[in-house]
Length: 348
Image 1 (cartoon, rainbow, N blue to C red):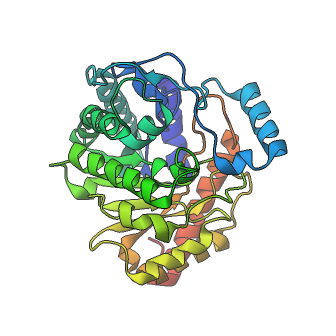
Image 2 (image 1 turned 90 degrees about the vertical axis):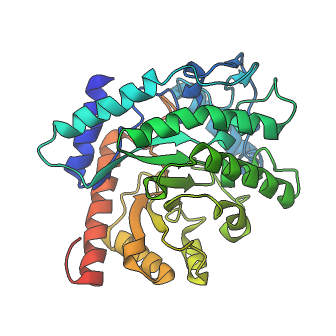
């Protein structure tokens, strides 16, 4: 893991990434790893599948077959909350932060910055079935209090914290697939409230919230429109929103930001690389996506280039082979440089 962490940081720099992370090396998935750092989790639950996958039986069969053949950790059968959820101690997250710092210090070429990820309380509460608390709200609050330890450790280590919250979009067609939109929005507001309490006192500019509709190569026909869920999301007290805007289902929604909906002083980290396809984006495509984001937001200083999501959500389940990942990140670099030249007359 130590070697892999150093490798993934070095390859990001080599690919031209300005703000790097540790690739979540050593975590079994982007959220179920918390079972090793928190009390209260055990057994095996049953995760409700995404509605769009169930709509197509042949695709469902294909997806399950691929997962069974490849993944080491099943996100469809995660642990359950069977007792009180609390954070044990901060040794693991502090080790991750120290390792990233050491890997950055060892580099000859220093990046502009670095971030570390942690899940939102909502994705844990939605995916890791509640068998202990008297309601979903109580469960979310408990997880939020526990995650506060991890959130603060990342910021205290000098990094930007990215809170990964696919629940704020994906759960509309998963846990809340058969319920009114209003119930989902109530859930989303509860999650955002828990995030705000867990990050209280932390500098806003060091926090960003990642929202997506699920990092999987599926139909996505049931994805709720960004404009319908934004009223709940925008209340997050963060300095940036990472939004999936490169995939075929949501690329058009960058125009939503023309309505001046981005909170004052907050940045849009626009997804301009699709993390679910092995197509390597042309730099002109990336530049055009960034230009549209700038046109929508109205201020190039408030737009950053990013990927739609991570390239792997759980150990072993590889959608994008590593060599293609680096090629896609080089395309991100080249497209961002091209967009900068057109916007500023120089490469940023």
